Length: 551
Image 1 (cartoon, rainbow, N blue to C red):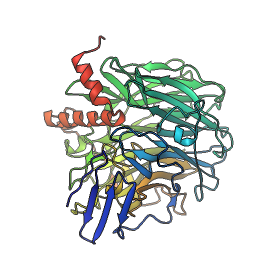
Image 2: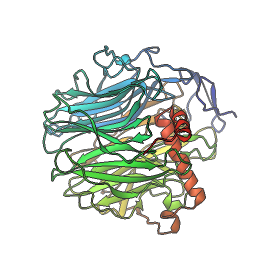
Image 3: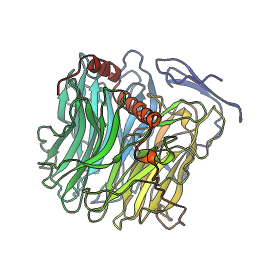
Image 4: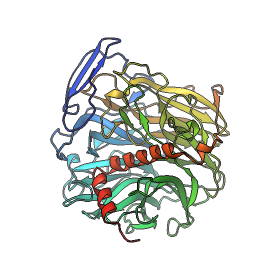
């Protein structure tokens, strides 16, 4: 068996002999001859949200060595309209490229709790039909996010870009579009920032203030050619009519950077930005920590950072073949609960002494000023678990969704993966349920690793947790992936099930002071993350090592 997952237009072959499956794909999934799959396609009660790609095959964005996975959806996010909870808006990358971004972003909206959907492209890239005045300058789009204001106005945000990051002729922007009709129509995008060859904007999110519909917050990291990667921030105070000039709100210094910035709002009016700080990005021993900063004046001023925990993730690989799986490693997610409750989840290998990533969780009861010791919440600790999403009900119940390999076999021809949900009222006792799977992760697009997205989404409708996620269809390579939702069920994803496991705490030395081999795995994972986010990273890093920037 040959299993070639490299990009650049090479053919890849998957042979699973157990059930006589033969799948062949060439040119990054643009054509296929697929036999009967060995795993069933997803079905009820799941609802498929995404349909065929609305974008043309050759609509733009190709660079030397690029492979486009036509009709492949990745990296979904969903929000629920607080003014009409039956109204959902989801967004995802459409037609993923092997070396960053996608043809464009596609939006779906539902008016019946996710049971049926209408989808449409949006003009955040040239493929979306944008002109030079409204998104058409950009060959690719990435990192979709969506939020609803209390008055029911929706906002979506995109990283839209062209060319090789921080290179001659490149463009990098953050764009925001607004909908006042539940996601049916969208405004021309507002440009929050536009950079050329001097900087690359990445991993943006957008959050509406839960208490005041006038305020919406955008935050991202801006990697520049001097070796800095501060958290940048912009806000609207007039419901999206205008946006303030972007500015850094936290700068960790030269050869350090933030990534995965995400703002959540508390009932008190305080907003909190969580992010990963990566230090020593040009060294051979980079480290990472999850931190938060707080603002009590709608983002006008910010506190000093508070550390949630070290991030000791090492990433994920196919346990049979060693193929890289690009997951949410080093990219935390946060959710707010009642009072000053905050919950952060991320991948972390501390619980296994550096053997594999599990799902870590830390809580704060005082709005992010202090944090609990991290605990492991995935129930099967003997296999990798990855890409967690988190939400918190009004009564404080925590819900977390994630992928793992517990049902994988020794067959190297497929990577059997499942999607899980676990919930807890106290952060100690957890009740787990199955969301979807098994599915073959080997069929996913390859973008510096088998890729479903750096994140997935977990929303709330009333007292029901509602997962919104991407998985493979188990139907070959012509249509590798789709976005799915699990609408509220008669027996909801809550603690009505029996307790299945108790959170684990690792008090061993490896959990606070990893050894040299463990540290090297952490460093390698961070380099993989930065290379995945910025295909020009190796070139930029080499330049910094040869010509260090002054502090």
